[in-house]
Image (cartoon, rainbow over all chains, first blue to last red; front, side):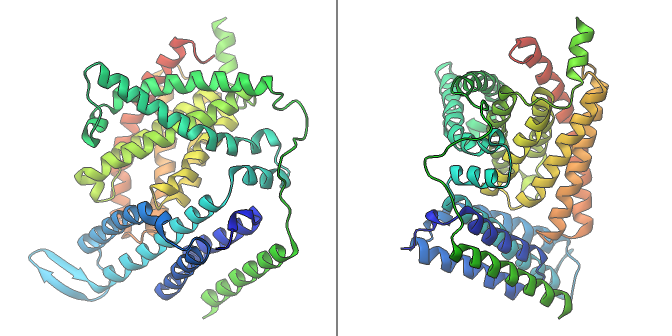
Length: 244
Length: 185
């Protein structure tokens, strides 16, 4: 198994942007399919399984089915292939749905691959290398740190509501109790942000121009060459799309 | 004193630590709320047709609310946290990066001109958020999802109409409630 996590975040970001931008400019189903297969192959090589994409695959299928329904109902591109009462299905709609589905797969899965393989502190260091003041760059690890905290806060609000006789166990109950949960969550967020800002101030956040990290990032020659190769590949694909 | 407070509110930038950390924490609340409302919309008939009415209203509310509380760059930070985290639940995250940024900048612009005490101020703030934001998302729907142009335009018009009304009411009520609580100065 190749440990991608130790690679420089700039290389991973370049790879992610290459996939996203290529999928956005592509109008070709084969190219999108090749990009998707590339992501899946790299995932199998690095992780030896695709289970990290299990949840997102369900969401993508839901989004894809929505695109298909809209295109089947309202799309009027190409030749009619099937007709029943007022409903007529055109072949162009099917192609557009498939193209849209492949594109959202590439865009979403590549971003998720980047998010899984890149540590939040590495992203902060990458931003610092780009001369972004560390007060702002450090917000990335802070986001990663506070995400589970706020999710737990939401669950504790739901538990409090349940204890007061408003059940909050099923999805439908969560939906029904959303208005009653959001304002307390906002108030708790305000309180937590007050406490957290005081804590970081007491630890000297923003006192000095620079900040030390336990582990630093550095671009190795192999990673630099890879970045150049990816950029050249993107330019060639763009030129092919424009002139062929 | 009231005038001083009003003048203070008219500043666009607020770069203290509390605002930055607060924007991050509120950005996470923004993500949680959008994720839940997205699930609600997915269960409803209009959500199955790709029209996220409740989710859109929630998005417009949080975009304006966080910007009013934490100003800039807090507003952009929270908005971009939501846009980049939305990769976990929406394929339109690329469009959200631009839509959220434009929405929060518009609210900052309105908040710098008005003291946000009247309904008309919130209506104006939400007009920009809903119209500009939804227009950018429409471009995303057409170019990313390959949805037919006429369908995307009709969906956007309905979304703008619903989001504008709902988000204005919620923003005004929530903003007044938070100011009254004294948790935000």
